[in-house]
Length: 517
Image 1 (cartoon, rainbow, N blue to C red):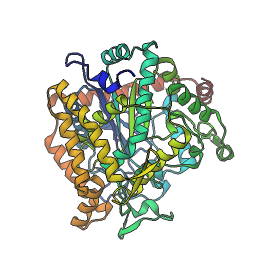
Image 2 (image 1 turned 90 degrees about the horizontal axis):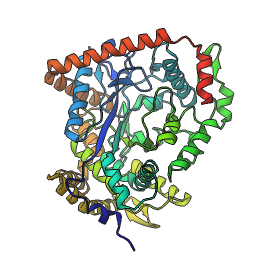
Image 3 (image 1 turned 135 degrees about the vertical axis):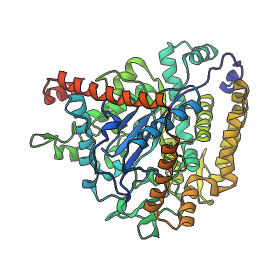
């Protein structure tokens, strides 16, 4: 029997190890001073949501998305994210930036303005896609916010790893296979991230108005899950019936792209009944199970940077997997930037171990067990009597989490020795402490904070949002950084105007061509 992958990685020297490449996409709602979703358009000072490289919108005109460049260390990445936040906070006028994943006060679908991207065909496509989400699932679900963590390993690592494993594949195919190896283990263990980082145990009563649910009453305007970690990732969050029939397969790139492509080309009767137009207005891109790949919601995605007008599947098939996107993270309401340093360092450790541990293909039975474990932790993760299915036996959630932490210890020590620091041991200890003291998990902290303050979800969110805004505005930006952000905003507005001026193809022709490709 050959050496294990962990043993092979232990042969890396400090000069051979060049660390991780990382970036964050962080969403958040603009709200008014009463804690109601903002009805105002995307602030002009923040530039064009279509072309700005750092500041855009997600589903709603009120749902900002802030995007860092790629960095090779956590502190620089978080400093960049904080700078983007500071610029946004200085340009919100009297509005606030909502700190929680579950939304502020809403008044049904009509209160959630769909994002606008101008008159260029690509901007119209983005808007029509969002209209499609509205007619398919309603807008309420789309008002939820999260943080997406993007991680890759540099080319130098992949070349060495390719040699150490003695692979005969092309480097492109090898990298894709290895990223899917990592993804399979991520799916086996992602419940742990919901336990450690789930931070949405409560929601505003307006979110579940006229909806049947099993939440407990916290206050007049707030419901909560007594032992829930993340309502965002549960039945009230991202879900839909059509997608439950998809069976997207994460075993390898070919099965992933094939099952996704099938969903984009398989008609769904309910969506066919809706049609693609109301009068002259397009209301969805097509009537398939998925309009485009991004409609499929999953806790993790293999990604490849797309070129203009290129679809994600095409990019993956032609150039392979470039990085992994972790999509299950709730916003950390205790951080002004929505994520924190210990969390990011732990994710690096966790994902690297997913790559280095044995990772057989996942069959249908295991797939169902993994989904059950994940949903159980989302709904009841803080219940000490909760058990999970591990290798066909039931194990207490605390024991299962401790066992995973134990497995991470040797890798944390090795990464620290390669980097000449104690970064990963500290990050691991911070997360391990949550197991010995469950009051430290974010979902417990949120409820405790609300209770201590005597505030429901809305008032507590407003209070935290005001604190973050005050801190970031006081911290401010250097003259150079402020000038850089202003220039980015102005350039993005010019770029959008030029795109609109140059775009003379009728939208229905553009859409037909897009759907053909």
